[in-house]
Image (cartoon, rainbow, N blue to C red; front, side, top):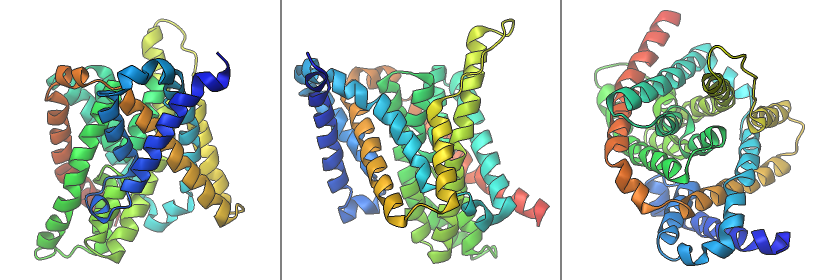
Length: 341
């Protein structure tokens, strides 16, 4: 079997799902509820993976594995082109500090509560924590590349992020409508709150847009800084897990995920501003396709039995963290603004 025959069927299947998901994501109703193409791809992949894919797996498995492996890592590298370090200056050091605190505290709380209270396995807790604290589904699949866990656990974590991130789009505008009646909060301030606490980029845009232009602008910038924290998060996580695996008594060798470094390099390149806007847009389109293909591949290899086995605990963990993001996030935003203003 040559390379083309080995990888082509699974590659084409993943690409076809990605194209279909991207098309469906253009529907106005789908945009209203904040479902991105990568989320739709995993849903379609799940449906096919638990119906007809078992009959196709022999021919497609190698290509599908390629998409959720090497292609996923390449997509994470290219994801950095969407960011610039100039974004940091636009919301100031207060906004940056809020994002750092929210990412750190949310991830730690998710892992501790998930393992200690709900007795969820470490990998699932880490995946849910990364999705809730950084940038939703993209963070989940990037973290999977670091810890090398199962597709089912990734899919469950993405489901948690989608459920509560979608709820955020509708709840945050309601919170703002009531809050402005009793508290002199500006759209820009509330936008930082949105960007520092809602899961997915698309959901941040949806919630901010429902409030106003100033809110959505600061919300997106705040969210992009959280996305930028993905690279140092992966580096720290990889180093910690490696050290823990080898044991405290052994000398730990530093293992740096190459895709996390590549992510930062792409962000640096884009920050320098010498790439033509047309080229940046092309890279973003390619990256969106690759990420969507990877999510389709993860969906194809996720089995319904794993969801039954996981039970309701991941959703309960997501609910607890959702409440923390709303209440704890508001507290962090207020404290940082009060202390540093």
